[in-house]
Length: 124
Ligand SMILES: [Zn+2]
Image (tube, rainbow, N blue to C red; front, side, top):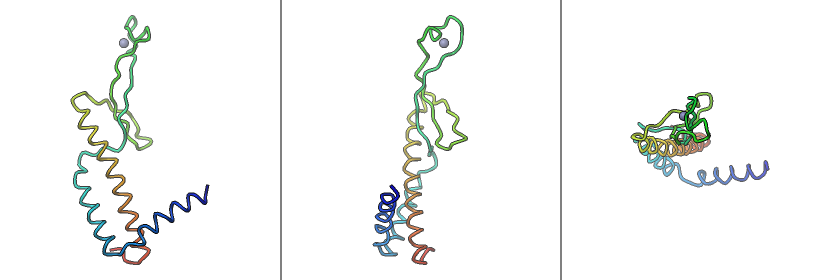
């Protein structure tokens, strides 16, 4: 297991280390430009849940719950409280979650490039 993991990391490292510093800097600039639409990003996911209101005699008490309702579940542990998403905002939140996923990947790639530049003593 350790060997497999080590191989994967080396493959990724070699991928970056085979590129020229000039090409890494150009790639980094392009990645930063993609962060421009980050204003509405949401890091987490959309989930659907049903609810029981607790009122006596309600249909949900007999096993037919309300919903499903849509919630945003933040990824960060500890602040992972679900936030209700009204129908009018589902598309905005869906796009925000998609942007959040993309930005996370872009940030990870910029960091990998900077780590490679650091190894070359060419991080600026
Ligand atoms: Zn109910």
